[in-house]
Image 1 (cartoon, each protein chain N blue to C red):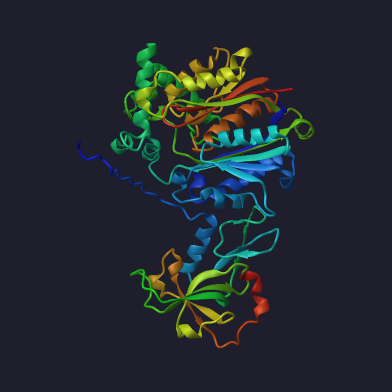
Image 2: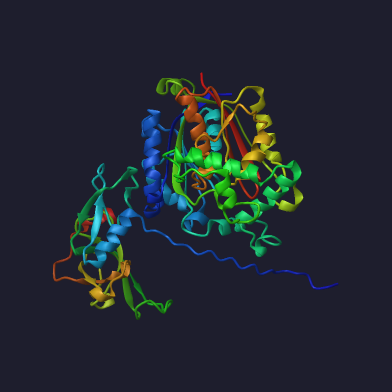
Length: 162
Length: 350
């Protein structure tokens, strides 16, 4: 009896050129210019950032662009203690959901320039952009958020966004 | 059987879709079809879509596409990893069950994101065929050659189909082909894969389409002349290209017989022919007579937003009934290599 063939290798590779879409393209272009823009739903009034061009609740186009503040509130966060990617910052570091003032959805971002153990829910933070020459059409144009000296936000002000 | 009709249709295929994401592409056609139907969007009883993750290049793309519908409060919804013509079939079955009276169906495809002809390779048998990477054009060319050899037709017959479709498409604002060509122009083109020339292959297209179905009295109340579905059926040939006759479309003929295409005159037929020879095979399989107008929209050779192309055939054919220019029409949709899967739908006016 000859050995059974148990495995074949059949490589598959397809290359894609993905477009961000009209809404997200606006967001990415403005990031390079040091601005953060979202879009407001004409039906429910919620402001989405990054915008996807539509409101998933109402199924309508979100044509109205809204420039957002560079400050916001940490709604929830996670301290990362495991090294799992050479691209990630040195551990420990903090990933957080940051609700920008005026937005209705939190952004996923790093929180830095503060010891990890001091990051907390309700902490007020402000955006730190990458230097202009390092910015690209990518969310990495936001380097991270850092604490402001403001008192913590009241839980009621962000509890709907957890 | 419950009377079910098409009461709303919208489509969009254009180079401008390139810059939009799937949701931005789908939303206007969903709103267009719902507005055309006269049924309020929150009264639609069932929603079903057809799309393919390999076109989007990401998983669960049909879930994010739901953003275009506004699925809150939660809706009854389903999806097929098939052309949306099969989503329409599922919606028709739901309407037959009687729990809902209306349904929204949509499909979308951005084919400009990757090498489409190559992408179709991965639907093949993964052991003996896919590793050889025959692309879609090559497989179609095999079938075209088999058809020409079996019927005695020639390359000029294929070129004539392309010239006819592309000239019709040039008159259709919803098609991406905007220039007519002559059969001589087509024959002068270098081969894509012999015997096929570029104009005999469907163009790369980004686009979407949506249809609203309604049953019985609801259809009559919202639409002056609904396109009543008198028969809809789909059949499948063997997956392996080597185990079926490529010179005919056997499953298309079975589906056509099941819905009674030949039991009356057909004013207009919209056939999902992604290659010129497919139109000829399908005319034979469906038993269409010379007096039937085939693909007045330009068909898939005019615009081919894959996963919506078949649904557009149904919408285009239905539109001829709704506008009163036709009484009995046939729409066809296809999936799989070399017309493997075929859906045929007969629609009539009052």
